[in-house]
Amino acid sequence: MTAAEWRAANPDKSGNIRDYATINELICLSNMENINAVLIADGIPQPERLKKLNQIAISQMKVLNENDNRKLLK
Image 1 (cartoon, one colour):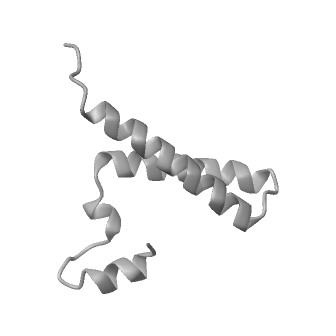
Image 2 (cartoon, rainbow, N blue to C red):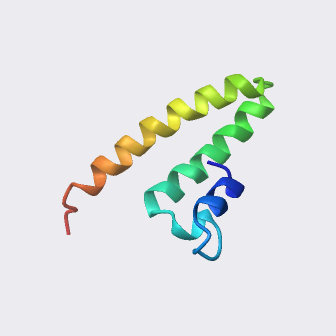
C-alpha cells in the first residue's frame, strides 16, 4: 500500500504508516530498501525488482513472525 492509500484508509490516524508498523515490519522494510538499492545497481528492471522484493518480503515476514513465537534464551 502506498502512503497516500494508507492515509486515505486511516483518516483518523496522525503521522505515517511507519508510525504504526510492527518492529518486524520495520525490519523487513529496511531490508527491502537495501535489497532494492542492490537490484537497482545491478540494473534489474522495476517490474522484475518488484516481483523479487515481494517474494523476499513474504519470506522474511514468515521468518520474523515465526521467531516472535519462540521463547528467547536468557
